[in-house]
Length: 415
Image (cartoon, rainbow, N blue to C red; front, side, top):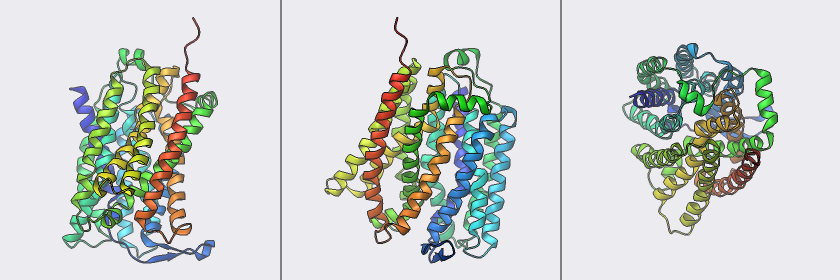
């Protein structure tokens, strides 16, 4: 009963966050924005909007390193509702301001939303069932982005103005979010058995955070670097999904944005469920590394098969998405939860989640800028195919290096 309620509430809360974060990417923004004032050329309007929101989201992650790691559990639900309400107000400002100046409101929209994952996961971490709970939460953002873009396209077809569509979409999800936040606030804290098996979870002050980073710096650097690339790849695949699917032969089919993500969510849930069966925390930590490495390999192999015309376009998009999320999802739920439990540090997994997230969105901005100014001649699809190869190879090498490091760093003392 506890797991069912916790998963439903966490899934719903984070799903609703996407209702105020991603619907603007469903609109066919046309035109360019000149960046001559900062010594750059022109950039597409959609890319400009995406980068502006991501900058706000990225800054939020850096702020969240402190805010989320020190957040008292009694304030989480109120903060959750408040942050998403602020993001919805920013979308109203976006609708009322002419382009491209309305991009400032997308920055304001991203600024509170970067805190939401840490707030929701704070209700779930440090429990015997954290893998199941985290998997249920993670499934939300795998399917939510496509779902809210489908809602956005549907509203556009009903005649809603493109500038107002994001705010209208967000308003549809706000009441449901409030109910989910209330349900999360009613969850009991971790039991004594949870604490015994997974280590006590408590806010981390500055000195505690610095000691943790110094103690495991090499492995954390590998994980943070590869996560930046994974986040950039995920963001590109997500924000330009309508363009990619259109180039693959599925134009004007909003349902593909949702239906294509369902088998990915199921596959990721299945792989994370395997982690729950491993009670030894060190073995689970290393097994998670192996799973994530397999995701990188899948991205490379699927892209090679598609290039050789041995795999259709839809299966290719689904398989690279599955490989991406097998490597990406554990960062937000099981990876650092098991690391904390393995090393026995009294703290919170939310701290390292936000460290990697902060640098991850720096990677996303870098990839978007590189596309427009480094390889502007490539189509969205050609760029994405090359990015699939690069992401799979580089992240695979980093996952392997992190696996070797943590296997050595957490080895049991000789008997």
